[in-house]
Length: 169
Image (cartoon, rainbow, N blue to C red; front, side):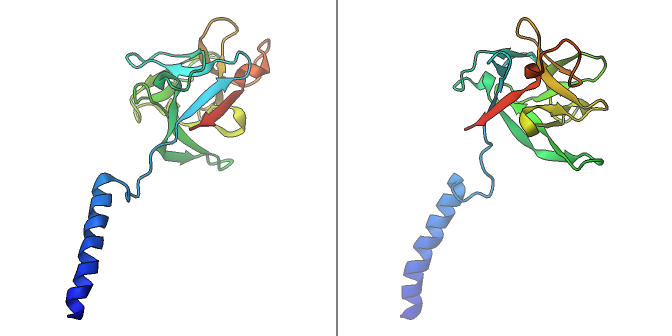
């Protein structure tokens, strides 16, 4: 009789646990935290296209996926200072923020995650730094809505253009 009573309790609990696991309520994976990044100089947010590789700054509207990003699960640690870098992924297209470190003012775009070295970013200290040879930082252009990856402190550029205020939901 005791085993029958134990089954009456165990079976419903087991079924409830199974249902919660199937629906994802007990999953060990958690949903990605959405981030938006507002530039200090102009008050616009980092945006990306849902259909192209374009990245720019645009009016902040956190309800639009083009203004939302999340940090990928993979990381790399820089040898000389131990800083951790991750891929910054656009919610609009699922691709990673990318640069190529080929010039003093580098283009920024999104591309498939994992196929480019200029995809490792850190959001420490209200700046978005790419772990390239020159440690480039994301900044806005002096006019228009373009964003670039450049070395911090280039002459004639307002330092506020390198500052990005991150907010998450």
